[in-house]
Length: 469
Image (tube, rainbow, N blue to C red; front, side, top):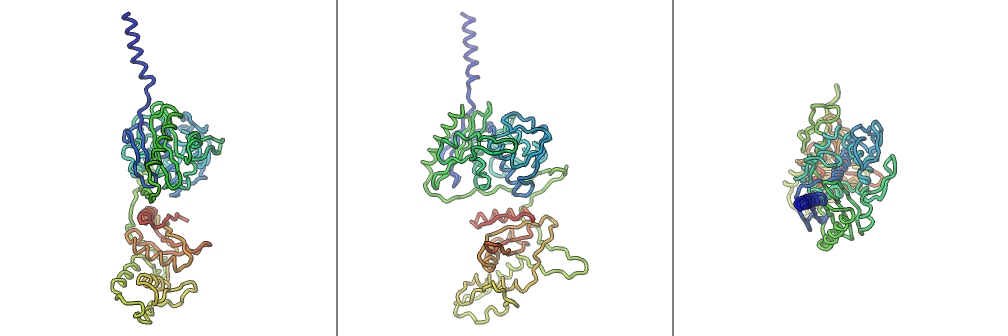
């Protein structure tokens, strides 16, 4: 009897250890506003499993956008990447494959070998890529996340939270909408073969679901970050520690329904601020060299003139802005019909372009008059439109396409007046396209262009970066 009692005690002690589920955590967020609608253990650090690949893919999209790599770059697969355990695409060491197929495999199949190959292609090694993942996470506000690898297989210290993963999912949705459709594909061709989506059951069963990422390891349980849209509403839900695919999907569906019930029918979309670009600390081939990211223009660009030539006249935004501001301040407030007939005489261009229609003094506001004067004055000057690329100042930003050159130039001047801090030293340039006239600021560093765009977007001004070439 004593031996039997000891045996029973031993079994009772052993059984819970076998069936014990991974810790549960959840968060429900209104994707439009970032408002949390429900949370449970949302700040508990847990194993994220393949939810990690959301960050791997985010950095891949960022690297493509920044010109570090392209979708058609042929990536050489390392032994390290090829040796990753399933889920896998089946890459072989030494094989070359386009980055686009690695991205598809990581997003849809959740392939570990593809994720590692992506990280090594961008940062040179998985360890360097993990450091970049952590810097990006910190910049996003993922304060309780630490990444140790690109795929999410269990490793000591590789931890995240339901809150942080929800934040990351929201950034994927709004920062890279052009790539977001990847996460809703039920299957896709990944170079070597067609792969099926690990999240296809939830995508098929829940109305409005269109992503994002599943994850599973023994330590993590069954994880999922999901997003769904119904009418004007969009909800993001994260669940850690599901006991099976079926029970996890059922829980996510339950939380999604809760989110749609609690979210208002109409809400203004407040996109998350783009995280600061961090890049690679040690680029490939540059051992010991550090890239320092600057967040503002340090000095105005002045191209060096060639020997024996006259110095070019460079129209700097700052000079025009200062003159324009002085004119606005000193200009008397007069009714339109009392303005002198020759008000614009001193700044009349020598030859007015056919498509430039200056606002008449009879119906133009003071701001419009100012814009017209600055544009007309600029027509008189010799403008240097081709900039030296020394110092990396071969980036720019676009603030929209407009039906006329005058409209584009007007927007450029108003934008320069509003955003003097980041556009100092840049050049205004209007480019004639088939669909209209592009309003661009050129001659910027990549960092200053990114900062200017983020500041303008925060004021609801349309802006996107223009890369080299």
